[in-house]
Length: 134
Ligand code: 5GP
Ligand code: ZN
Image 1 (cartoon, rainbow, N blue to C red):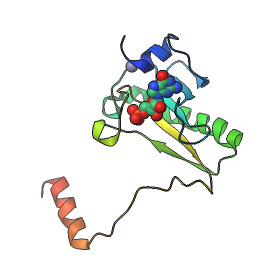
Image 2 (cartoon, rainbow, N blue to C red):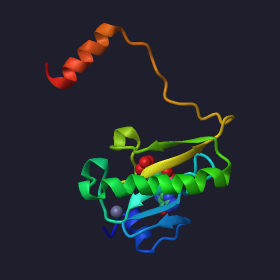
Image 3 (cartoon, rainbow, N blue to C red):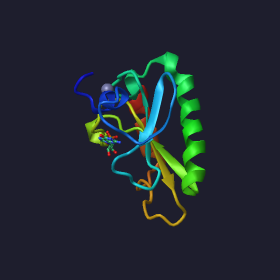
């Protein structure tokens, strides 16, 4: 898509710090990293989000994600990493070309994680029924 920033990166119209690529996928550094080595992994073909991700790319995608993690994590000396796909504006998606954030994590970083809350067993039952339409 002409007005998609990630399609423009794929076409080479916008520069990026490329970490790796193959026929289907590209990995490059996020321009506003959460931590050193924060990378984005995208299909070269345009899909808005993970719900439009075609089945035929599934297996190769995660193999590529693993390959990029093996490249990035030791290089920046990280202790772990988060993978994330923001899906929909409410979830923080800004670029509507499917991408996975690979965010290196360090033992002493202060990023934390999602805030969890306690739930009663009844609430979990109600939620399951709502989801399954029971
Ligand atoms: P989202 O919020 O949609 O999940 O994440 C989009 C990400 O793309 C953001 O973390 C943002 O910093 C990154 N980004 C946006 N535009 C560019 C760009 O032109 N180049 C690079 N390398 N990253 C970008
Ligand atoms: Zn695109």
